[in-house]
Amino acid sequence: MNPVQQGMTLSAGSLSHLWKEPSTTCLTLVLHLNTNINTTTLALNLLEEAGLPKFPKVVVVILGMKSEAQTVLLHHTFRNTVHAFYFAVTFSEIAVTGLRIKTRTNSHDQFKDLGGHRFQVVTVRYFPYSDFILKHNKEEEPADATAAAADDVEFTNSIDDELFTLLSTKLNFTWKVHEQKNGAFGVGTDGVFSGMMGDLQREEVDIGTPPTITAGRAKIIDFARAYPSVPLILTSLEPTVLPQHLALVRPFKDEVWGSLLVGAVVWAVVAWVMQQVWAKLTHDREFKLSTFMMYGWAALLEQSTPNPFFRNSYQIVVGGWLLFCLIVSTCYKGSLISHLSIQSKTKPIETMEELVSMEEGTWNWGMEEALYKGAVIEFFTRHSNPVVKKFAEKFKVESWQEGLEKVRGGRYSLMGFEDFLTVIIASYFTDDRGRSPFYRSKRGVTVLNDLGWALR
Image 1 (tube, rainbow, N blue to C red):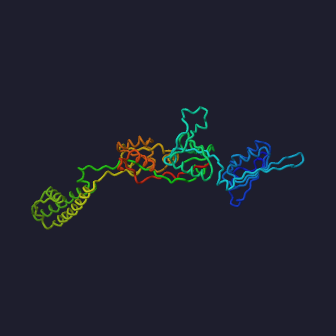
Image 2 (spheres, rainbow, N blue to C red; image 1 turned 90 degrees about the vertical axis):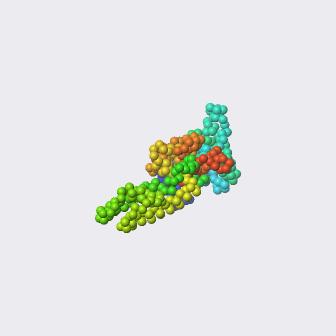
Image 3 (cartoon, helix red, strand yellow; image 1 turned 60 degrees about the vertical axis):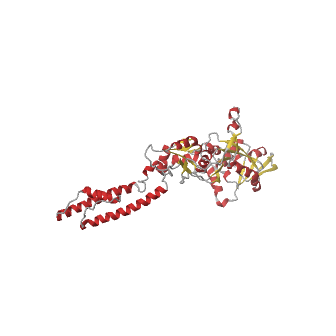
């Protein structure tokens, strides 16, 4: 096929559609190249655009000049092709006088043994999955050291280190690790990605670790799942014991105390009205409203009072109130004993809903900066839930040192990944008895899919 002479009769879209068809599982692509280097470049770029690297089982047969064999077979368009054959023909003025066949086959055995191939790996420090040390001192690097600018690093004390070591032993490959120059996984804008995703999109590296997969990223990379997702949690001060002087009122909630107050007043008014009506009908003694008020409160507090000589006509009202007071006082005593036996503590912060529902200025919160990257940024900036949007509007991105110091000052919460904050608190803020001043919420928020390796 000559893209120039044939007028580009096959578009990238039609080629892509062809080898996606289930009926063409044994598809062979025949490519005829002439001596024009521009034509060869156009043809190979067409195959790249059509997505040939995504279909390694397509057999490629190339007919061209002997001088171009190595260049064409090693072209990045065929980087994933399992079987590629190059027919180099020697032409005379009259007929074909010679034929050479060159092949490049990625057999299944070769996939099991990568023959010492060296992968370019880009990484971002993301505890505990990826951690590293710099091989070079940036201040001592020469100005023209563009390869080292990506900061050659060495994995250390991380899960990635263990995985690469194990897989390289089994599959016979080596790797060179670079730190992502912006320390970012990258976000997409109109299909163009920054950070690590941009490095992979431009095919500057082979593997990126340890990002997560998103709908946008899935269009430009393959993804190998390696690690489970970890939820984001809130870290606040450990709940404190409530003040002792409030122990007498804690057995009942505010609503119950309010109901008792209103109930006592209503009972006193009803009993007083009934007594006034009866007194006018029988010309009996009248009592003041205050008498009923004091009697009602005395009964509620289990205090004896002089008998006001109530008539039988409203003894039912009085008896009902006394029975009610007996039930209330019994419940109060039982609750008071339990509260005095087990000291009550302040309610811990568990969710974003609790934070955003607080009055303005009464509580603040922040986000741990080292892990606020890529997909986490997309979650908080693009989420449509009003709670998430309000939470994102008010948090401050900061280091864990600064955030936890604010938490210790009170009325402040720091959000971060559970495993990261757990290790930090255990390492720096926990005594020999396992006690720390911080409380980690039990209800986390999962914002990432599984983490792993991004492959171009």
